[in-house]
Length: 334
Image 1 (spheres, one colour):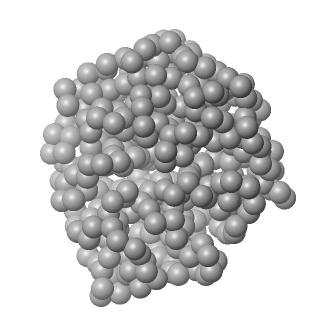
Image 2 (cartoon, one colour):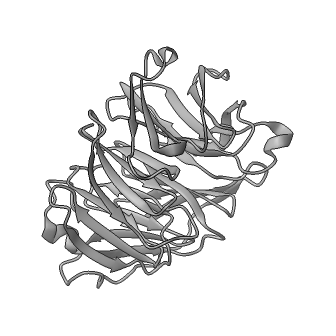
């Protein structure tokens, strides 16, 4: 597999399905790449969490979580530890977030506080802090080492949260197209900047910073994608997608030059941010992709619905690479 160098339009246009995993028992709710290891983690409607080796296109382990379910998921700094949000019985046990070891299938810690489902989750890139945004109209700041919540932000609507790549700033998107930026060390002082995404008051369902910290990527419930200047809040570009019954995810490439997204018609699209030119469109082969992320250090992205696909460059032409079906290896139940 190619290591990441600067991408070109030709490389982007050559991306095609290299591996397919189709034995999920429902929609894949979320997924995350580890920052430094070649690992991918998924959380699915079938209550499974699955760990993949992306360098070899291999499923390493599956665990099932029938009591709590598996909704939002992200890696911690340790390659075999994750944070996962619960979807079942929240009103009974209140255990809305769990810190899990994939190595020995243990829950290391429960985090209680949210009264409704967590819809956004993000780990700090530099320390043990993480953020969660919930349908209970709150964002909570946590530390992996302690049970107690470290801070609460009350707000309107459905929140989306993200850290910048240096971990110095985090962004909270909320109702009415407002984006608030906080200093991670002094979040209790309130936001130091507020942006409004002019002309679109739809809820933001996902927010990401580019690796260089200069841009933010917003995906809204009205099927629009915006790239904002992360310093001034100005809209650099925007793209409209076909309507979708489910929230979709867009992703920057690691060099910050391109944006990839799914669409409600089951297609995938790539745009060059500076030129605003569409580079390529593909049939996703999996219906509407609810999850889409580019690997941090590889020329590779993954797209998921109830099927997971790995996309890599293929110089036979767009979309022509043969998909490789890979069997499940290890199954555990919690």
